[in-house]
Image 1 (tube, rainbow, N blue to C red):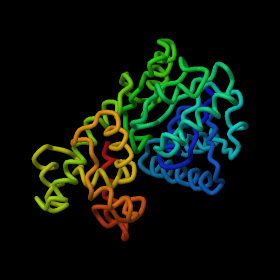
Image 2: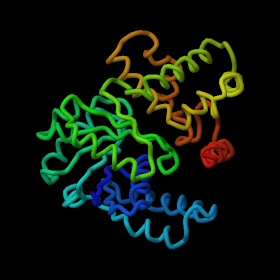
Image 3: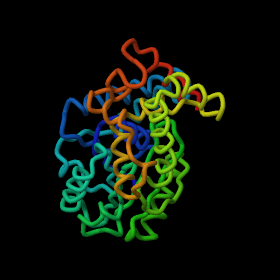
Image 4: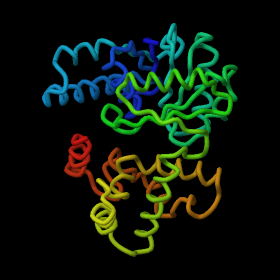
Length: 297
């Protein structure tokens, strides 16, 4: 399996494309927006430049990585002859179902369809296809080129062979895959999101400040980054979407999004990507701190 398509050129999509291309896979990066594709290639180039500067890769390897990526705005053209499609679109169930229905129609019969969803049911996604045994989850962590974990999520119908193939492929990417059964939030977000939500409730109820809450978790619990800072890094809209999926699946207060989170998303305060969340990133300093933290890994 050497021919891969990534659907979506956003933060996760360009990171996934970068990771596959650096391991010498042929990668088709697909997005409906030509501007998004141009921005994605620029981002990948800058990330590779940083790796060259740190002597983690050579200039020749950077050039080779970029040459392994081809961009498309037409999904039908972008999936021709590929062995695996990794969908990395926005965390929206209706959008993902629409994309997978389309992929099932235009992909070769042998093509495995994977979703980078962080919470949405793989089993449900598979129902809009005629290849449920070939539908699986590949939940990469952000930033993809650096973070080692991949949650490999089996839907109810996902075959043993497809699961084994994706587990082994993840290892060739230098990742550590963990097989997970399908459930809202899987493992990572089922544990992480209630903690982030509780941190937001703690702020909402005026128990402590943003800095106070993050400091307690960093110094008291040895977390490398406080939960509110991490929420900004993930994207508050993404946090809200995941919590809504989990609340729908499980019910209960611990999965019910804090009103403060809902208000912030409605106001467009989404974290790093909007320039403001629990912290202000307008001068880039907090953003640089996040990059520095992850570059240590």
